[in-house]
Image (cartoon, rainbow, N blue to C red; front, side, top):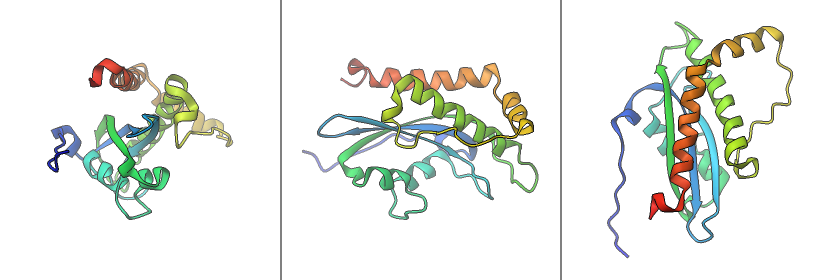
Length: 169
């Protein structure tokens, strides 16, 4: 086995944009597949590029390293990241519109992953068990446009294509 490895980083992954993503984690021995659904841009100040978020997922800082926290030994898995973006980052002091949008897109993506790829395989399934006031439901409904749904469906299609046995041969 070679000690030389490489990985590709598309330029889009270096931009500071609101994004939602699916991490496909495949166990290197059992070939079991698990999914993590996340976003860039949080409810405070900040929005890291996708590549930074991916690196943080595997860091030893427990606050940022959800993949390490969920999978325990990430070296036992191979990871593939799929993402789509929803606009450039705007500091929350100027507008919270981007944060509201990416939060809703993450909720929608999590539900879509559960429905299309299997709830039991999602390590962070959205539970949808809290009360949402009518005004907030209306805001969320306005954010859930046909174009954005299409973007999320394209993301899921890319994951499904990747999971086909012939796509990784």
